Length: 282
Image (cartoon, rainbow, N blue to C red):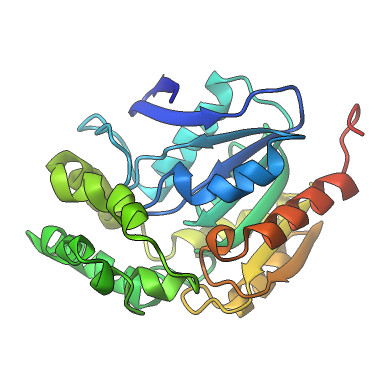
């Protein structure tokens, strides 16, 4: 994978290359770019698709000890990533964490189109049982390490109160090991994740929602129809705040819409971009 040095440290990323419209896919907490694999495969023929590995749990390179890894800090790293690669007119797609919302009104100059799939928003933070357990564990010395031990056992990770509550499709053992291996084996990666959980305020996304009405560019809110951790009503409320926003539900999907129904999500992204062309596109 190519790598790039940012202010917080060095991150890896995937880049399909090409001269098509630019799509940046942002993963959530405890995942890496592999969660987007089928969406990348469905878009790469006509788009330049980039997937940065953000330092929120499944990254292989610890960040600098003084790095700001709060939700706002991760949002700034995402903006810095786009700056360093000089990406313009980006279609930014976010899943699970809500950090892309934090760029609106502050660092959104490179974003031409915004796609928010099931993610933290408004008053839904920390989200669901999973989010509350993780936040509580990070506040207790050794708590995060103990909580993560369940990911050594796929049958525990697939429980409804864990990863199993985020997806309808069965998660393979090798993906669980890939995503949670860094957290289980590297205390500095655990430190980075704990910093995110401890530094992100409960009202973070509720406060960010004040800026959403100022985002008049095209926006798509594509929510898992069966999401329990990020309820569809949250997605509908989010879409109503975006002046040029449209809400759709992805059938047969929970939070990880790109895993549960990548074909439907890819189709929605393609239709959204085609319906909102930029000068020189099409």
